[in-house]
Image (tube, rainbow, N blue to C red; front, side):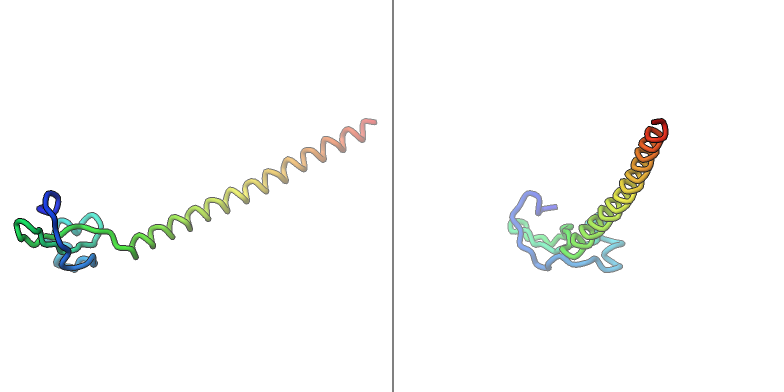
Amino acid sequence: QCWLVEDYAVVQECAPCSGFQAASVTECRPTGFVEKVVCSTSKRDEYKRCRSAVMEARVFWRFVGAMMGVAAVFAVLVVCRQRVLDRKALEKVRKQIESI
């Protein structure tokens, strides 16, 4: 991995791995995306893993959707709990009025 210690130039922008690359290039496994780089000193072509903006956006919106779902569930729980507490308070007031 010459790009860790040398300057490099990007030859091919970040792109999804092909089926052959996914099986043969170890850099494809973590993210599923690679870019081809050329190291300036050693002149070697290597693959470098990268993150796709599309993939990052999809993960972000999936997270936002999950958080909205969790917020909706807890909002419903709060409303239900408030109704139970209101009923208990009304029952307590009713009992106090009946005892007078």
